[in-house]
Image (cartoon, rainbow, N blue to C red; front, side, top):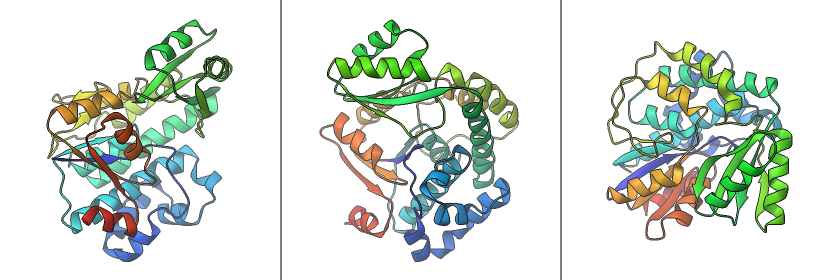
Length: 302
C-alpha cells in the first residue's frame, strides 16, 4: 500500500514546479485559483522571486502548497495511486486538499489565513528553531526542560532528528548544550518558533478566520500530526488545526502508524525530499521516493 506525503515549510526553492507545470499546463488552474484567493500572482512569486523573498511565510506556505498539489495532480495523471495521505506541518493542508477534505478554493483560503497569522506572529515574537541530530528525543526533552527560558521539542521527525523551538535566546542556549553533548544542530530558516506556545496568538486568529469553512471526511485514511495516528474524528477540524499550530508534529508516530496499517511505500509530493529522507531513517524496510520534477516523476513511474 502507498501513502502520499506532502512537504513542509522550509523546503521551498525558486522556480520549484516550473518544469512540471510547463509539461502539464492544464494544471495552471492551481496557481490561478490560489492567486484569486491570495490577492497576488502566486505563479510569478514562485517562479521569479529570490530565495529570500520566497522564504517569507506569507509566500512560502501557499507556494509550497500549490507546488505540492501540482505534483499530486501530475502523479494522478500518470496513474500513480495512493491509499493514505499525510503531511508535515504545512503539508497537512495539501494532504487535506488532495484527499478532498477541502476544495481547492477552501484549501487556499485556509492556507492564506494560516500564513497571515503565522507571519504576524513571526514579526511580533522573538522565536527560533533548530534541528538537532545525533541525539535521542528523550535527551533533547531533558535538556530543553533544564534550559533557562522557553524552549521545547516541536517536530519529532525521525529517531535521529528532532526540531526544537522557543524564545530566541533560550533556543540558542539549548543548541549550545546539544553541541557540547556531541549532537549536531542547524538553525532553521524560518521566521518564528512554529508549533510552540509563541504561536498562541496566531492560533486564535487563525481559528476565527477558518471556523466557518466546511471540511469533508477524507477520500482515503488521513494521518494527523497532532495525534500521530489515523484521524477518525472530523467534527471540528478548525479547532484541531488551531491546536496543530501550537502542538508538536509527531511525524515518527504517524509513520509507525501507517506502517502498522500495511503501508510500505511512501511518495513525497512537493519541493525537495526532506520527508523521503525521514522515512528512510525511520522505517528501514519501507520504500520512499519523491516527485518534484520530470526526472523524479519518471523514477516513480518505473
